[in-house]
Image (cartoon, rainbow, N blue to C red; front, side, top):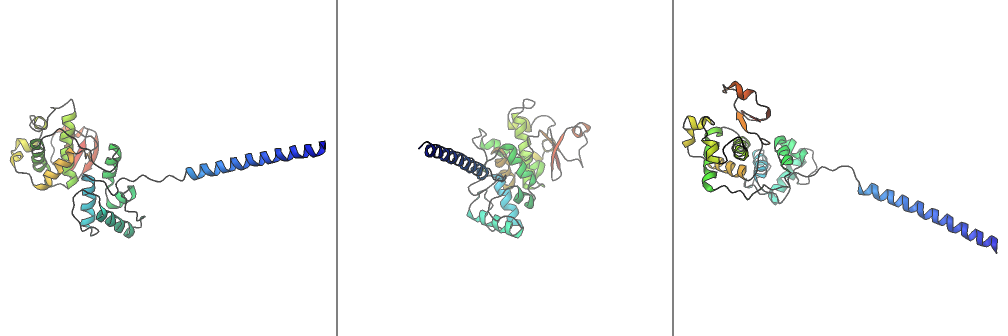
Length: 246
């Protein structure tokens, strides 16, 4: 009887150890499943909107992948165009514009700008600028950068808005633009030209929060700039003919 009891206890002990081992193994397997290899977070996907989406659509359309309107809305047509581009360029055709897709499109700066802003797919809004502010900003963009790419025009607008937010400059768009000797376009009178639709859109995108300059306060064209002071500023990025600095 005692021998049978001891055997029973031993069996229970062995079973307990077996269960514990099984639970440990199950837990270990569960941890491995819960922590797969790092997967890159998407930058833009269906449902997003704003200036970055416009630039994405513009490039896809320019290269023959997209036939829709360049309206800044990441809908089904944009998603299908991205998939088409991805398939043709050896990327996973998921319709999501992540880093690899941006790099293939030559939009490295756009991806970095979105990451720096913590962008989840849509531009920020809720600004207190008036329609007059937007129009004046567009006039300055047109006068200063009408020969630049769309991103380059948004970048000039972003610099002006960054100055508005900086304690080193006037705190209004008009104050920044008309500050003495701040912009060549004001000095030579080109500020009085009427902006086109591209400049108006660029102004709105800058106001909505798109900043391809990553917070720069200065820009210049090194081919024509004469001030030795500006060359001493720290360069952050170059877009088209303009160098953007802090």
